[in-house]
Image 1 (cartoon, rainbow, N blue to C red):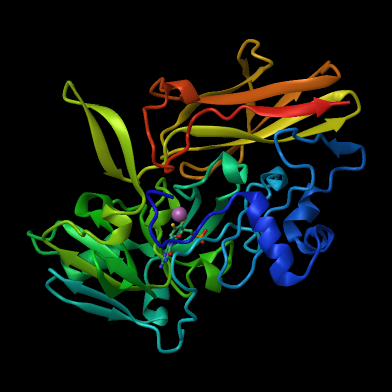
Image 2 (image 1 turned 135 degrees about the vertical axis):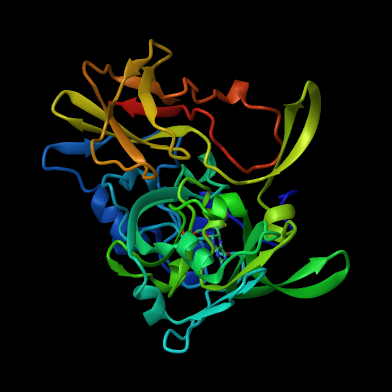
Length: 395
Ligand SMILES: Nc1nc2c(c(=O)[nH]1)N[C@H]1C(S)=C(S)[C@@H](COP(=O)(O)O)O[C@H]1N2
Ligand SMILES: [Mo]
């Protein structure tokens, strides 16, 4: 990866699978049997999964393994809440086991009253619950969109914490540090760095931004940042700092790797009438939909997919079959402002043979999900929000 120096590699499934087979001494069958996600692929009695011909026939997603990246088999996306055991996992350094009893969150920097809060103090603050889905900024066709999940998060508002500390007028940037650390080669020096991301004070003061300690009603699991993580609803996953240890308010931009070097999209943009190559930190989730599974029941086929965006209301989701007209899909009623939105489309009279299926979403501002051709020129792999045509074979 040209835009990725020593970061975690998100391998194509083929390489990943070969690695897993070697490392765990398990054949594909063993992994399939042990994956809880696979169970959800089990269909209703009269329902069968139609194979995608754009997917390797023996495709499996990497299972949850200590230290490793995990992504979903997106064909298994069938419930509003992703079970904690299946939610995708990405970390760029290690997965630190933080001592919960001795745990303290520190709020420092340009504040009137620095804070040190243990879990009991955090839990006694006003409780907020929010349904939010997010994907890694690197989620793409290569993992069949599996770096994604949707959960109910419980915690307390960041705004409340910042107000309790009293942010000084010159405090314009809020930095979030995780407990996890690694060595970064910066120029030619090796320096130890904790994972860090930041928010402008205006974004940090959005009351929907939380520090969370529960995921789907359970204590935050180790791999998802126990005991406390940030949740910035409507933003790509990288904003949601896990194993949160310190919140620091400062008077200038934070320039750490995950703001300024990594998770930076390079694309050609119209900058006030000049076409320039712009480098922009990955922030709000761009308008995106994708088809993830097709099932058959009797003569009828059902196409299922998801929508993610920054929380802007949607107008419609549509499906096109073999280049035909756009037809409205049905959005699942179970949805929150920042959750993913699942959709289904019932496809009658599907003929035998190979078909191309694609979805697109339109938001309430009339913004239409772009086609791959309409995407700005963009050599970096971040933000893959173009329409995603799928191929299936009906026998
Ligand atoms: N402390 C810490 N937080 C982190 C990361 C990390 O490496 N360290 N990775 C980020 C990235 S890139 C993503 S996509 C999300 C993934 O969250 P999840 O593993 O709970 O799905 O966590 C974010 N928070
Ligand atoms: Mo990510």
